[in-house]
Structures are given as structure tokens and as C-alpha cells.
Image 1: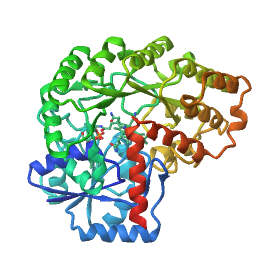
Image 2: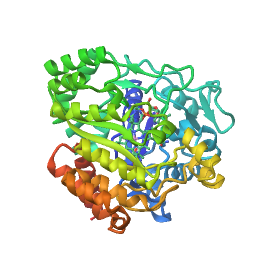
Image 3: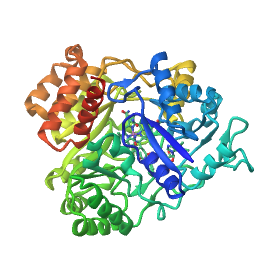
Amino acid sequence: MHILFPYDGYEHLGIGYLAAVAQRKGHTVDLLRLPIGDYIRGYRPFDNRAMGRTVAAIIEKKPDIVAFSLNSFQADAFIRLAKALRDCTIRTIAGGPHATAEPELTLETGAFDGLIAGEAEAVFCEAIEYIVSGRGECPPWLHTGMRSAVMRAPLPDIHTLPPPAKELFYRHAGFEAEDYKVIASRGCPYHCTFCSHTPIPGEPPYRKRRPDDIIEELKRAREMFAPSTVYFLDDVFTLDREWLASLMEAYRVQVGIPFHAITHPVHFNLEIAGLLRSAGCFALRLGIQSVTPAVKQRLGREEENVQVADAIAAARRCGIRVEVDHMVNLPGESFEEGRQGVLFYNDHRPDTIKVYWLTPLPGTKLLSQLQVEGKISVEEAMDIRRGRGLGRHSYLFDSGRAYSDPRWTGIHFLLVLLPFLPGWLVRALVFIKADRVLRFLPFVVVVGFSRFLNVIRGGDRVGLAHMKRMLAGFWGRL
Ligand code: B12
């Protein structure tokens, strides 16, 4: 069978794993990059010409089935394309975070022959064989236009999965191979109200791969692709200390490629920083989101600010670059509290502050809360749940958001510029509430400039990849 995955230009481990299990079963897999923008610039809907060209390009590839991995930002564009394909009698299947959060609403669009909620490696081949042949009995985990599934997909055994099919992505964008993305564990035990990847009742909240298997994957990667860095995309890479210690020791001896990772401040201290550093960690991304205690509590964030401060200090002491993820526009947070947040970071000095505007995602507690509190209307919430409300969101442009107060823009600017400014200047800017004026500066210039500085200062591999991806897209259009 020939399977086609349309995608938005970002290497995607979920697609990579599904492609690998399909290839192992003898199916062929192809990718098609869609002209729909990206989350840096915002997604744009297909116009008629682009839609016609894309459908024609897909028909030419003669897929037996087109498989869509939906996140809530590009879901609208993908659903419209899937509908157009189904009108041409091409079979379609959906999965991914958006489809998992809203299976019924996604199927109601009439765009898909089938949908799987949750991790799909164990059942993907059976699902596409059932959809394409139309024979046999519909499996209990497969949502179809006729009925909802009675259960989520059974979890795959992560110890027996083949490595993700990287070549598919590298063929389209060679630079992705410079930073090898790997996932060493799946799941996160925390219940942050804004996150759509919280534990599911009845499923283990956190599963880790065997260190030997991870090392094997990375040794193979080194031989095949010679990456200059490795990126661990686990939700909380440092959650299990014993496991981490044995992985890091093996990594240091057998892999030795500089790496970066993502973790939670509660699971980070000087000892863990030392472990990571001795194995070659050069940067760490910490999810902080807010430093206002009442707001953190509402978001389901358990850590104290002193733990955040200690985590930043521990990384810096060991020479690991610290990037923090911080959110603005949080319900219940005042601008004065936002400014206090700027002062907190000014005292502890992470190397980069990545600022995100709170975005209520489908399936999250936060979306229901905002709706109950009347902060977003029932219609807006439904649009988000249908995958229509978030597409225009952009990291780089002030493009309008589902739920936002533009006055946070000034605080956003202070946060992204902070690492490049002396402490006294930041204190003075906060003292005079400069955010009230700064917010009128051009968004793209301030945010783009700060990100660019991070890239040239070194260490921001993700920012570097964004730049290359954008240049490649621009080049392709010339
Ligand atoms: C790594 C990561 C990124 C990376 C790479 C993104 C990518 N395209 O893979 C970067 C940094 C670029 C990124 C960016 C963004 N991300 Co992100 N990211 C993650 C993260 C931490 C891990 C993803 C991963 O690799 N998982 C491991 C693989 C194996 O799982 P998977 O991708 O979910 O795939 C499995 C299933 O979903 C299913 N499946 C997936 N596709 C399909 C397709 C079919 C047909 C089927 C049947 C099944 C199926 O089977 C797969 C195998 O088990 C997740 C959180 C998480 N732990 O999942 C967030 C997450 C996916 N990101 C999220 C978001 C919101 C974003 C951004 C919009 C951030 C922003 N606000 O700017 C952008 C969107 C960019 C984009 N183009 O996707 C949300 C998505 C929520 C939603 N409802 O859409 C998540 C779930 C985080 C969250 N806390 O809520 N992200």
C-alpha cells in the first residue's frame, strides 16, 4: 500500500514512527509539504488555486490512503484538504493531538474515513488495511464516519518500535539532520491545565525506553546522518534520576554528541545538571510559564519559585545554557504581576526567555474554565474545538489571537529583550512601566531581532532551524 502524509515542513516524530512501522510491514510512505505557512508566521487557509494544485499533486502520487497528523493550529487547513481529497474518492485517516482531543468533532467534518485517538503505532497498519479494503470488522479503537470508537488505541510497546523514518524528512529538508530529534520517554505525570498532553485515566502516565535502545538508535543516527547535535524532545527528560544516570553514562561513552533537552524545574538540580553536562548537554529548556504563585496554582504548576531559581542557577553553574518558556496573557494575572515576573528573571538571568501567548487548546481544562468564566464565548470555544480558531496565531507576527489582551505586548518585549540588557536598565524600565509604551514597537522587529540575537550568540539550535526552514521556503518560492 502507498501512504502519503501531508505535512507543514516540521520534522515530526509521530509521523516518523508511523511511517517506520508501515515500512516494516512492506508499505511505501511519502511526504508532501503543504503551502500553508507554519507556526512561526501563522497558518493560512488554502485559496482555490493552492487547493487545486495540492489535490492534483496528491493524485499524481497515487496514494492508497492519505494520513493526516492534526495539531489544532493547522487542523483547519488539513481538514479542508482532506475533504477535497475524499470528494475525489481518495481515502483519508486522521490522528495526532487535535484528533485525539476532539475525535467526534473532527469526524463530523466528513473529511476522514477513519480516525485514531492516542499513540497509533500498534494499530496503524491494521486501520489503513481495514479502511482501504473495506473488509472485516471495524476494530474497537477506530473512529469512522459511521460510529465512534469505544476505546483509545492500545499503547504500543515502545521497546520494540523501529527508529522513526528520518530519511523522509531529511530528503525534503537536509538541515533537519544536523540536530537529531529523539524521544527517550513518553508522557508526563503533571496536570497543567493549559496542556493537551496530560495523563489519561487507565494509562501509565510515563513510559521510558531502555537506555541501551536509545543508545543504539543514536549510534545508528551518528553513522547514517552525522548530526552535530542531538535534541531530546521528552516532556520531562530528567524525571527519573536513576534511569537518567545510566543513560547519561552510556551516552557520554558511546555517543558523545552535544545535546539539548526539555525538562521541568522540579526535576532539576545541581547534581542532575552535573550529570547532563558531563554527557555533553549544552542547553536546557525549562517550562516555567508564570512566576505569580496564585496563577501557577490555577495552571496546575506545582513548583515554587525558589525551585525555578535553583534550577536556573544549577544549569548556569554547570555551563548549560538555560531557555525558559514563559506565558503572558494568563487569566487572573495583573500587569503588575507580569512586571514582577520580569524582575524575577532579571534576578536569575536565564539565557533566553521564550514567550508564548496563552492559547486555550481543545481538550484542556483551561478551555472549559475560560468559557465558564465568560472570557471566551461558546462560539469561539467551538471554533477552537473544531480546529478553526488558532491557525492565524504566529510566533513572529502580532496576528490576532483567540483570547488576548494586547497590553501584554510590552511585557512580552521586556522579557525577550531582558537577556541582552544590563540588570539596572531592566529594573529602570520596569520601574517606569515602560511596557505601556514599548508595546507600540513593531512586534516582528522586536521578537525577530531577539530570536536572531539568540541564534548568533550560539546555542539556539531550534531558532537556527526555524531560520533555515523559512529561508528554504522562501528560496522554493523564488
Ligand atoms: C516536540 C514538540 C514540538 C516540536 C516538533 C513538532 C512536531 N511537529 O513534531 C516543535 C518545537 C517544533 C513544536 C512546535 C509546536 N508545538 Co509542539 N510539541 C512537541 C511535543 C513536546 C512532543 C511531540 C512528539 O514528538 N511526540 C512523540 C510522538 C511519538 O507523538 P505524537 O507526535 O503525538 O504522535 C503520536 C500520536 O499523536 C499519533 N499520531 C500522530 N499523527 C498521526 C497521524 C495519524 C494518521 C494517526 C492515525 C495517528 C497519529 O500516533 C503517533 C505515534 O504514537 C508535544 C507534546 C507531546 N509530548 O506530545 C508538543 C505538542 C504536540 N505541541 C503542541 C503545540 C501547541 C505546538 C505549537 C503550536 C507551539 C506554539 N504554540 O507555538 C507548535 C506547532 C508546530 C508544528 N508544526 O507542529 C501541542 C499540540 C496540541 C494541539 N492540540 O494541537 C502539544 C501536544 C503540546 C501540548 N502541551 O499541548 N512542538
